[in-house]
Length: 102
Image (cartoon, rainbow, N blue to C red; front, side, top):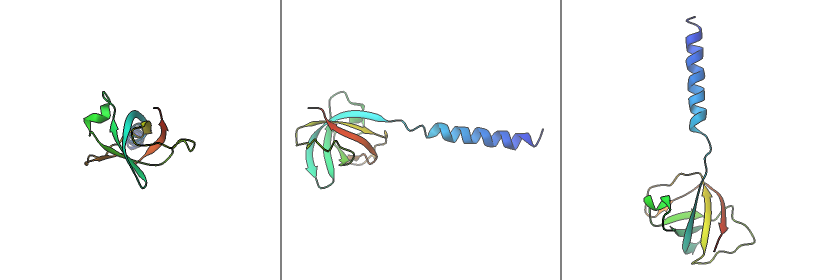
């Protein structure tokens, strides 16, 4: 029986780690304030939970629909890993997709 305890504890630990890396995605919309070399400076739309982090967020120009060329003032839909670096402006680094919605 004592041999099973470490094995059981190891199994519980591995399952707990798997639960922490669920790969959740977050989506929000934001207006483009500036377009710089390699990133957008955006302002989350009113009512967005991302506004709790910052009124300005930098987003890398990656995984965007190639047929779209966003301009300042356009609204983007950004899908990311849910992590926002708490700086000013705040930063999102892991972007899954970006598309123009307006």
